Image 1: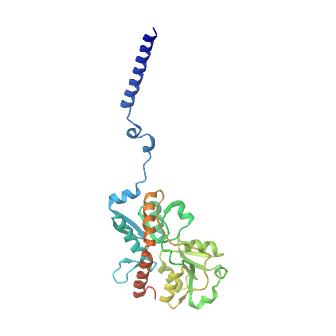
Image 2 (image 1 turned 90 degrees about the vertical axis):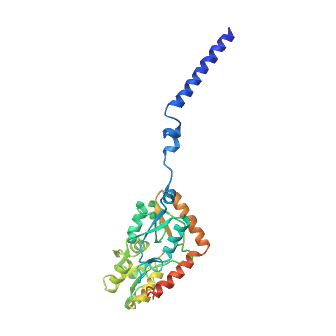
Image 3 (image 1 turned 60 degrees about the horizontal axis):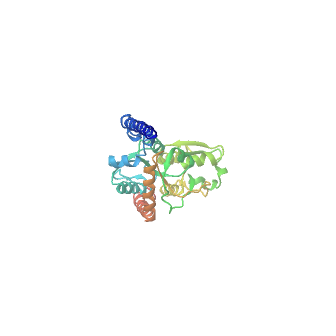
Length: 288
């Protein structure tokens, strides 16, 4: 009796097992095949998409010699940042396409992903880190400071931030210089500009009292225009170097770019590029 009951029980269990197996085989497939489970979330293909396309687009604002500038003879975009962009493309094994635009547009291009990267002497900031992926630092051999370029006839008037209170200061919108001007100068009238050369002309035409910019760039303008000078004033600012930006969520791409940057910095390549770009820009009268 017990033997018969055991046989019936075993047969029932066998039917149940076979039924479950058939359901699994006919009911929409596995989690991977049906689109359920972890594979439903699309992975980060930012790097692979560039490799598959065979091209990387880089947003650059070429008005910041020696980092990025236009050759006065050929119109070619040159500079240490350009050399780095070429190096990155070469390391990835893809073609480089330069998207020339204003600095503010470079930030938007990175944030929206209309360009794969933005390389334009970008400084790291928490605001940018919230909306973009930011790479490892490069250009770390240069001590980066920020100041306000002024008229040479007035240079002795400006020694502290208080001396600029109530003044009209030009700065590129969205830049570190804009943020420093609006946060550290009391009652300042900040005037947005698209190109640094526009700010220089406005300063020389007495349309503004100063132009906020990086100290080495300010010095190059002062050396090129006798009417301009760099005061002893410096913004309260400390920077480790520059970064490359890409769209938020492009983690794979950002990690690869950071890996390339870490290596080129270790090899001293950027220091070499900036020395060469400085010599070339100076020979064209852009720095002296």
